Length: 285
Image (tube, rainbow, N blue to C red; front, side):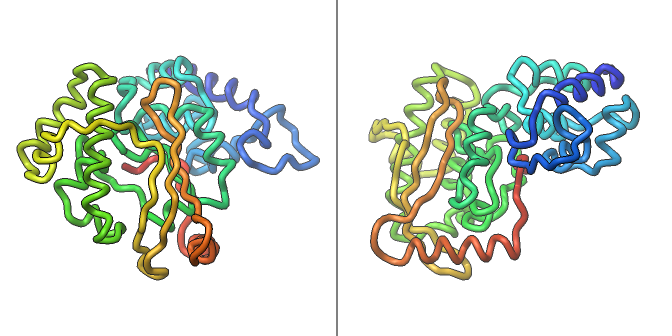
């Protein structure tokens, strides 16, 4: 690794980003062309002292999680992000894994949805990043690793994964997850990450095996869900998704259908989220 070049690269990327591009106030007395060091630290979930050390080429080797957080904070392209991992002496994560690079456009859209629950997930339903309201609605991002990071895997192997879904929704959601997974498997063309997940689910879940045998296939683009919030009770919401160009990532957001009390509950969720939960800008699962 080369901490000196790592720090220089961070500084060069920081200088090109304007505060408004990442949702920060511009102010009237800025002395730098782009972001300040303390602003990057906040966006990456790091202390200002630690980030200062990184830019100065000092301190310990940054973790893979910190490199991923810095890449997101600085809106790096995929090539720039790979270069940052190289300079940090860390292996570049696979494109589809938990540490996958969130497309800058997806991240920008996510941060433009502050009043609705929203998240960016992989095609295997591992959450990469979510906003404050998504955390309030769905709970914090799981710390699970490997296959367990996939919500589809946990849905069929861990009963707790279904706790935020109304019991009447479970059968429908199971069918949708399986049909979507078959579509992903076809698109990826024998990718071991997908085929391994399918093998594991076939051997560990009779429900999954039965649904898989039905041969249903459909990319999940929109759905209506009844979710259970610990304080607000059942909330009926429309879940919409926008797929990245290559289909490997999806931006999900939840809106209230016309009629009923869902809009009122989302407003209450905003209040609860502001009181109890901070924005989750980088992945913890």
